[in-house]
Image (tube, rainbow, N blue to C red; front, side, top):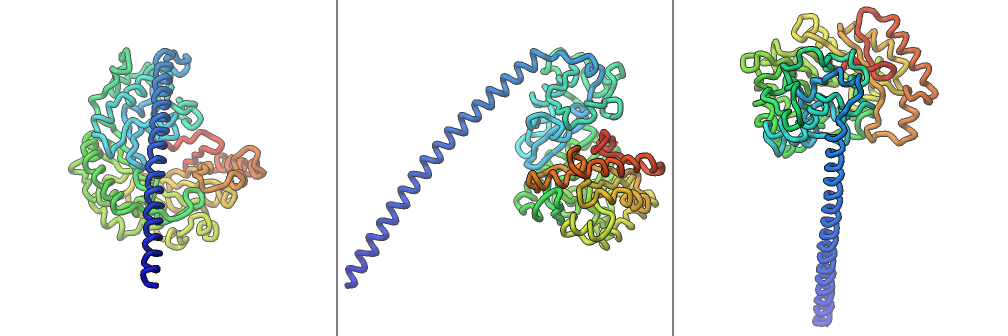
Length: 418
């Protein structure tokens, strides 16, 4: 009896072993198949990139209007985005993910003067802007209204070689004057317009980011006049950024001014006390709030408490009045739940001594279904609330004289390069 049971289990074990071997063989076959497919797709992508480059290089004859302008961004700015991907401005303003390198794997000099970066600069110098996304870049559509667009007949030799004859000539000896850090997704809120759940980087990701900030960013700060962060997450939640900022000083970087983006919920006297070394360096605080009352705020800014926010905004207001920060901007993502509060929001901004209020059109960051996004995007011209929303915002422009209003809903966004 016992031997029969032993034989039965032995047979079952042998059957399981064979099944496991078969699964392993299948996995190896699948792995090989997908590696081959990935190789084919990579090859196709490289061929397409080569064809695109060849087409661009042979068609750099821009229309006469664009040839009047040069954009400073590729010559003066880098953005470090999630995953270490480096761009020369907001990635949305560039075509087909035109990143110039990765800060986690490359050195600053390799990336700043990479072939991709030089091709981008050359396209701008030629007035073609081939790699730029006109759909999102308001500066490209309205160059007269943006400081980053320089008339070609002005002296632009201070940041570029105006006489470059080919893209290979577009290396720079200068370093960026503006570095933007959007490399940490960690946040204590999960706003409906941004994400569906709270996101916090792992310790491993934090260590990787901290190493990148020290080895890649710090050497690039020697001639930098502006360091901004974040937009991808909350500044006062990001462990590597807070640690990095605690090492900065006016003595080491006398030219550097700081631009901090925050949701305001953790902007307390205690938090700022830990950044005492930044005194005299903070130029602008940008606070995103999206509401003008408790009910709407706590519905849209999930995880936030209205009373806490208001207390912190009073503190920020005092910093602004005392001159410890030079400018205060407040932003508001317009959606169905809050568009009728735009005027009240401006009133709050004036109460808190803000310089600028920016109204931003809702963008679907994969947090809405197509139908939900349509119903919430009140500045979609076919949305049933479109006319009402336009009238409210137009009235604000007409009536508000003591505070700067900007938006990307009905007018070009004039605040992106203040």
